Image (cartoon, rainbow, N blue to C red; front, side, top):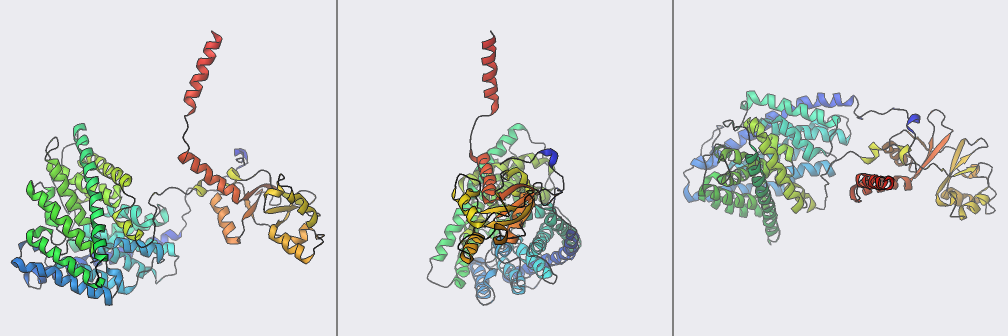
Length: 605
């Protein structure tokens, strides 16, 4: 194999494959952004209604927190009652409303051709609002991601689109819904990239970003402008402060790993129960109710508690109690299969852990370390470091904290990717038999051209040759023809005239056992071809479309002139080269050059 000389290459390629259909997707993303902002408003409205009804026995759409309830020990029954209704909705409505939303959105993208049913679009926000409104220790972002994605999917189904384009609009709905809830369009877009799209291409990134921006703009008249958790700006972080952020990031990363393990430990316990899964949320509701009775701050989304932690108003033993109780009730509630999100609980637990650790860190700025803990918990648990960093920046508008957030988030990510095989989201899918690779990179076959891997010794045979004569040549395993499963047929001038496969030979011999049929008559007159300057990706697409395993490589200016041969062996060779680049260890040429220089110097002396 040899690379094509640069002088012969014709640059016909562009950096991106995006075409003008991206403008259609942008046009469709605009109304999706508006629609999902209203969906987010509706979800928050429902949460407020259910919270007021459940904890204060009044009908009101004003935001309320369960912290000030007057129910006493009777409050334990509130999450149980909500969970019973949710279990009934899941069993007789749709089981897809169970869980925290993001794994379900991932499943729709991976397995469902990005199609979500209207039933899920209606029942998911209703079940999530009921769960959170009756004290469920969850966030609204997971449900709105699932609900926004459902509405994006439904909207896309009215148009003639590919599954990949429907995926873009599904994710656009999810991103716009999250941007509307939290006033975080950048973090919502990055979450889509890091967790939902499975690609970073302009064809999907641009429409998703547009929808997130529109959702955040429509939020302003509906819910008000950001930031959601405004804090006093922190001073520029010093080297000592960054060192402390590293320590906090590592410890929070370890905590996020333990939290993930505990969630699935609880889920495994529920799986062993000898009763129908419809009743599991009610059992989890008992634990949630007891936890909320002990510390009402663990009820609901807890935005005010999160803000208090960020302001440094929660300290000492109170932080320990908040971490322990919130972790238990959230893990049990989530493990029971009820409906609710993960972002708000994670930033509450991470912020409390960061604030607790920050009391012993240099500088004593508990508020800053609470921010670091929140970003690190998101990065470590979800494996989304960019989202974790930008999410906290948009929630607080504290740009000076960026270096410390970066250090803490990267440290937490490093800990969890080394200690855990999967994130809290992909673990759920893995338990359903689905695997997601989260390390995104440019496709090797997009980077390489056919000329980089093709064989410069194409197996050719004259058109006048008989099948019997060719059989003799193939029997010689040392020849080029003997090592190939197909040969290229050429005329007397060496021009491409067709292709003959082993299957063609067998059919010819079955029709004429003497083998006197010419290879031109036995083969196929139209040989599938590619070009040396074509991306290897395009050549593979041609193989798949034509259902063949090899291609003649011809001159683009003269399609009858053969310049190479591309078969499965050459393609596997490209993969082997990439494997060697990743795994094969060797010293660089620097030491060898130094040795040669010393040897030459000694020789001259």
